Amino acid sequence: MLVLLDEHRPSRMPFFRRVTSLPFRIASDPDLLGEIYLVYQAAMHATRVAVYYLPYLDSPALRRRKLRILMDDDRLPGDDSHHYQLARAFRNIGAQLPLADEEFGSHEDLCRHLDQETAHFVHVAQRLYCRSLGPWCAVEMLSIDWMRALAEALSVHFPGFIHESYFEDCFSQRVEERHAEEAMAVTQMVLQQRPELLDQTIRDARMMAEALDGVWNNLDCIVQQAVRRVNDTEHRGLRLIVARMAAAIRTSPTVQHG
Image (cartoon, rainbow, N blue to C red; front, side, top):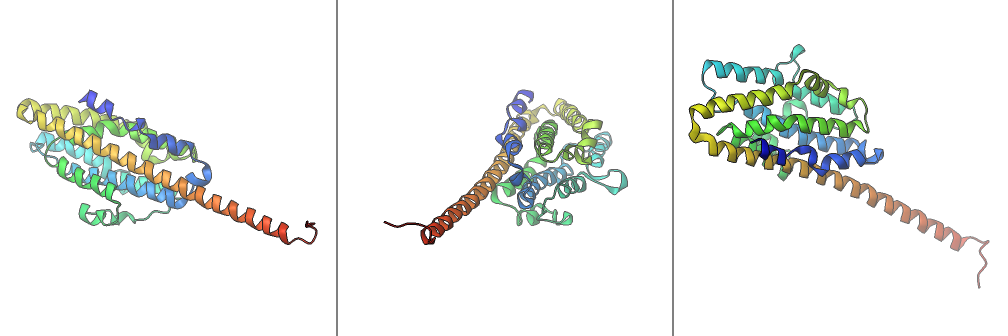
């Protein structure tokens, strides 16, 4: 499992490096930030919801352990949650959020607002989480890597971003590391009692890791498209300026002909 997940570390993906290297005029575009937010929040929402349906955690002791993880996501002090924290973090850097918080509901309703690639991830998470613990392990073990990569990439342009509660609370309290340790410990307990689940657990973990790669690839495509749009607009503007200057020179009475 550890070898598998190391092969799928999110920080290795070009999306994070590309965001870091963006010119500020592109990185600060409210619509681009909103697109990044929608894909990322939808993926996170899908996994947060799916945790409620994890199988094999039926005993009182295991239900209590799962509840502690649920509370870390959805029952923070002041009736806060990771969802609301993330939305605030993006609003604070000027993102135009395409969906209101409460529009992140069932996966069927949410997918109506998503591109095909993000909708695919939402469906994969919904399908895999309820049949084995492998996908949960994959997400929990990879989450600290992508959270740091995202926070550091956007903080190049928005220095306060990494200090938003969504990131700072998790980093300072080792929330994601604790979740990763707990997911592995609980899964090992289940597999000791039901070793026949091992192959399915590993297969589903791999599928989940591959689906996560698809999220970062999709986000990278979104950023590349934004860069192309800006470059095309600037090139058209430059050509228009040159054409106007040439026309002005041709019609200027001071220009000597022949």
